[in-house]
Length: 138
Length: 138
Length: 138
View (cartoon, rainbow over the protein chains, first blue to last red):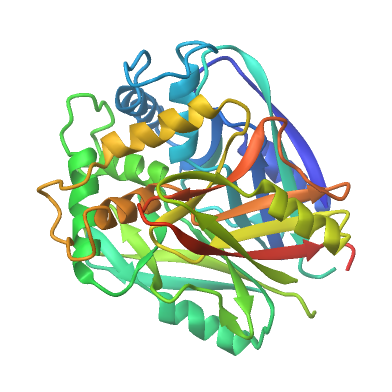
């Protein structure tokens, strides 16, 4: 079973969409199986990260922006904006797909784990994530 | 089919658990299918890496510790210890889930590939990995 | 269903093999399902990246070579060549497996997404990728 999620982002940073994925799992009535997420973009990523303290997300964003700065003289791919090439590099260093088991009717996330879209570009936009749900009992 | 593995770690570094995953595959009697691993933590990762020469693992650990040092003045998330924020960053740069095909009753690993838990925190602890096994013949 | 793909590389860089994966999906006649790719090497990776402008791929390669240079005095794992330890580090920072949903008989890739083998060693060689195809209708 495949569903499409859309996540609206206001610019760079982490956007939690754990609840949207949980809703899909609940509505599927799958008890045991596998949930695979795939993001259809090359300048945004998927991330499992701590959902408790916002300061960790804030530091993560600042750290990657320092590692992959804009206007690096190395870049030749510059026509699509100063944030474009850094976005491709960040996407290459992070996840495009994630596989999360489903157990007892729920995503088998750890206590502190949330699912995030990590947006690497500065403009507000809508991003698409394809969700494949496998039901072991089918 | 879902199983939970626990891996004990003594602190930072790579901890092989290939044999535990192989045992699960053998006991499942799956001939052709897919094994998906998911780690339920945000300060440790999953890694497929060379299983032959320990010097490669040693260098990998030293390299990432230089890239993501402790006590970086950039960090504001510092309450959980000097190794906490670096651990979240390292986890974001590495894998939370892995999909490994099962072929002829065995994990389809390359000759030199081992499966590792990459622990990013310094304390000894037990980590949980959820393993989903898909049997193509079921 | 499992297939093995071989991709010939001429040395470091990105090698597109989207068409080979698309052919497997077409021949499988799967309408809805999941395609999982796994690379059997620890010095090359899988990457979903922009397939439009070659300058993005070029910059990505130069950027990672600057982040993970050869002959770093930190390395002790040096017997297999100057490009070996950097290759292991790059592989650890990028993907060994990818899960891509199949929708309406096609890989659910975004408009600008291509599938690449990211070779981290300098020699020409053939690399092996194991492809697991799950048919939801089976």
